[in-house]
Length: 50
Image (tube, rainbow, N blue to C red; front, side):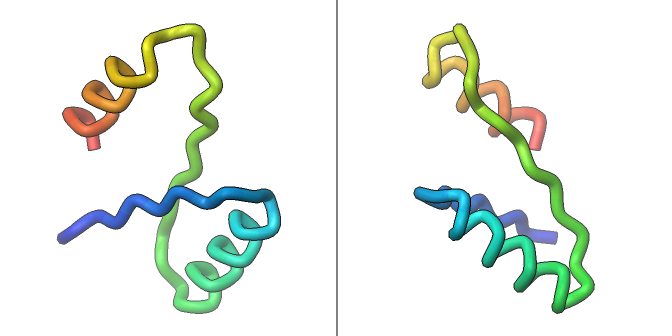
């Protein structure tokens, strides 16, 4: 199945997206990307894993 990546800009947007996805009874994962690693490297790894 296809995966969708959403980039919320605030905690309010995160909460709204979580509520929406929960209402649809869909599974979801959240990730905090606050890392000392190069953001481009992390993005490539996450794309490979997901």
